[in-house]
Amino acid sequence: MKTCARISCFLILAVCSFFDAAAQGNFLLWEITGNGLADTSYLFGTIHIRDKRVFNLGDSTYYAITHTKALYGELNLQDKSEMKQHAPELLMPSGTSLQAMLSAQDYKLVKKYCKKHIGVYALLINKIKPIYISAVVSEDLLKKEEKKPLDLYLQDYAARQGNEIGGIETFQEQLSVIDLLPLQEQADMLVEQIKNIDQEKILMEQMLQFYLNESLDSLEILVQEDTLSQEFNEAILDARNKVMLTRMETQMNREPTFFAVGAAHLAGEKGLVILLRKAGYTVRPVKRK
Image (cartoon, rainbow, N blue to C red; front, side):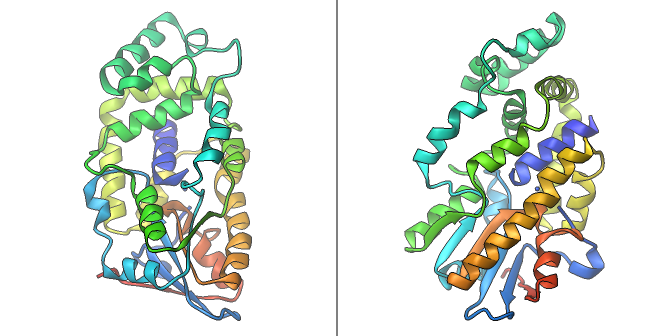
């Protein structure tokens, strides 16, 4: 269950690393200055859910958005044509299905649960890669009070202010990382998730409480409690953070930018806050009021 829960938390926290509490403290919003920057940029840890509690952003967050010229997420969620172009990559390879990868009993369990809980997605369980079905199942365990998840809301808000919207990763890059997890392993994790759905619901609420408390150290423990392959862990966290840093530096030197990425990317010795500091920037926490 821990492995499945780790992936679920990762996907919810943004498709997610973390840091020593004493060194970093409990903050989601960070100010970036120095190292030759002409203007202040910001880094914010977001989360991909629609529970209204995470939308209590505080004046400081809105100030940071309106006093920068661009908002860059992990992906540019405003680019619908790019999303449409890569949509086929969410699908199973031709000739492969979830039913073929599971026992009759496990498939029946998954199909019954999905039909009851995730609406139209239940019709696609043999077409979409299992890890994305798992993400839908996880998100369904939390409240869906807002029309859009927080990360998309932030991009929409910034766009309405006239800010440039962009992404520091490409859709292809994110999809390629997810594809490092073999389909059979994804399918097995989906079964495990549904068999232990009550425990996962508790874990999702725990994750949400850690996020609301801005407790990056607790989120780090939660996400890293269990591990997959070393290759997958490196690719999904550390390697992506290095790429993000390089692209953030290019963008910050071009114009002041509000970066909104999954909260898991902020912390840890190999997380963005430490990487930015090692690169020579002054990175200070901002209290959200």
